Image (cartoon, rainbow, N blue to C red; front, top):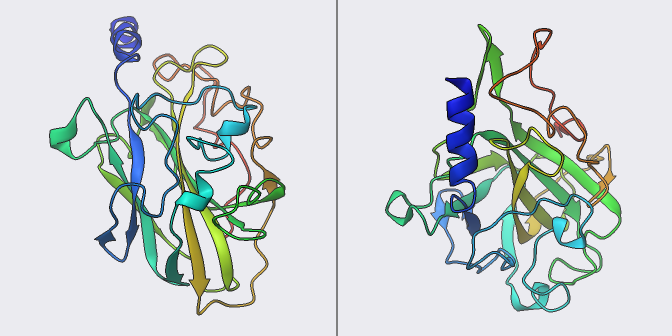
Length: 241
């Protein structure tokens, strides 16, 4: 049965894709690509699979021009923000995020500005939220499967300024070989107000945060080893603020 499920996942992998075009702020949803940099997969909905590709940062349609063509949302520390998904394959479900996988959100202080192509190009990213698979009774459970959106709270102690918010799902349905994991990415441009004096960290570079060989990226979710004790989230620990 596990082999049959894995085969079905592989067969559907070429068409079952999505994007994160809409920014959510305290329940209000933006228009497509209003505050999220339009991604290169805006039409195909296909994923990024190379963790070393410059496009792995925000998957922009144009690495030089997309940032300046995207608006900057004003948000407040403590706001609930996030992304709404869209899928050409399942538009009637409002873009359900239906691949099993791991969800997380990174942020970076944007220098010189959120709508500049240089933003986020250094070792400046920190993780602020994650939704990891759980493991019990010999099986992995994926809470992020078949959802339409995901949100998190901007830490109250985050300093004021312009930031990029990078939502990422690592889809693991065909991740048993190197390069099989699929990354679905969206970067929103924001200006944070009413913040605090926290020091976000640890800081990582994107690309550079992953090698692709992490046990949370290179994994057969349908046949975990006998000594498996639980999913290991890739990347740095979440900054709690």
